[in-house]
Image (cartoon, rainbow, N blue to C red):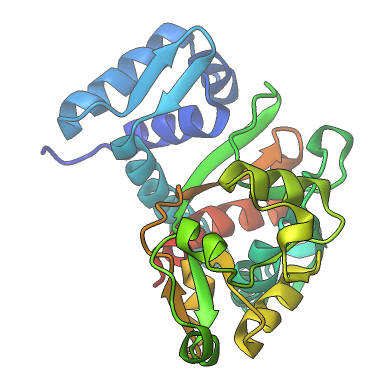
Length: 298
């Protein structure tokens, strides 16, 4: 691999953010053919395909997602260095509203936002935690962490890793009732399952996992995810959850290991218009840089 040009990486980040050669060119004050040529040059330098072109826009390959994450961290670091060189003693100031699903909001975001706030005490964060996706087009939030890629043209997105999922129960539960090897064994054996109460989204997600996982089949129901985790730790049943969260609690052990749950992709998303605000841009970059480590369990 040749030494990578920062100019090419900057162009690639714009493409990754906007999901489009045309919109990246507009953001950079360039032209679509030039941006396309620069991405191709970067791919030649890396020796791997970084993007897949389709009529709907640009999608990143696995190598592209990895490079975008690293380049985003470099960009954030350069921004910090430049602010320091310019004598920015007060740092960034302002209120940033961040939206995320409950597991991410409760377990992933607070340490990332705390680190950013330590470096910039003038920042204030509002955290909107909901299973429903905040509408960034109507300014429900400034930045969102989503488990699906946005399709709206005005939204800037950055891939932030994929979270592995598995089923967990407490050691006390396993000692008392055993550890089923599969979900089918768990359901056939009458094992207790923890899930959602009145959430239509949660009900649909569980039914997609297995049609037998109806609300009535659940032994413990709560729409608050932190309550679900507390219930699993207390021995009330089996809970599908993110591995990075389960690793925090030594009393939880994996069960139904034969169930291959798909990884949960993460995207950091913002409306292109709000990223001109330094506080929002810094928050966007910090989340995109730090969330892959959360997904990897680091």
